[in-house]
Length: 143
Image (tube, rainbow, N blue to C red; front, side, top):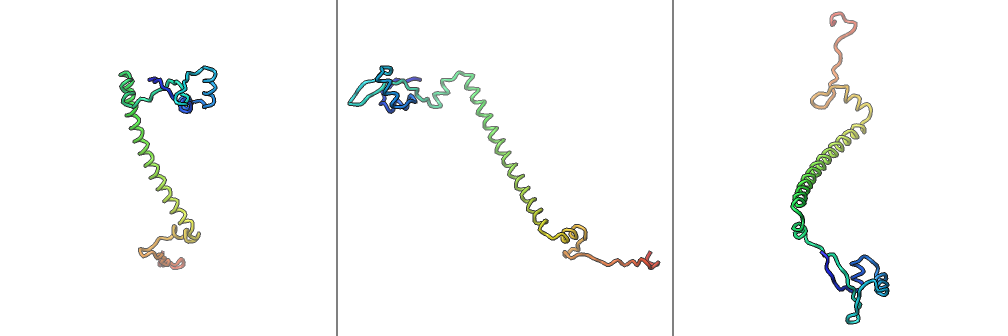
């Protein structure tokens, strides 16, 4: 909705989106309607009034209101999807970080520790179970 107002030169320049100097030049050229009131130059401007959301929706045709409602619902759905996706990605990042930490701790151990840790079975107390081989290769009784 357009409203006609008398504004100061500075206000009119801001409302029109032009410099104050440009507006004064247009006044001098007679391209813009102005008047002098109480030693202040006022400019006649048609200003677009901002409508509130209630007024904007009431001015819409019926099909447009339905479309706006549908888009609002889709927007809410997408927001929820985005929240869930972020939550999943945070969980994945946390798990990967933990796995990397475990791998780094394993790498810090010496090579022989890693080798024997994998190859040698451990007893319940964490002590290596290294029973000597009782078979004698040269004794026929053990075969």
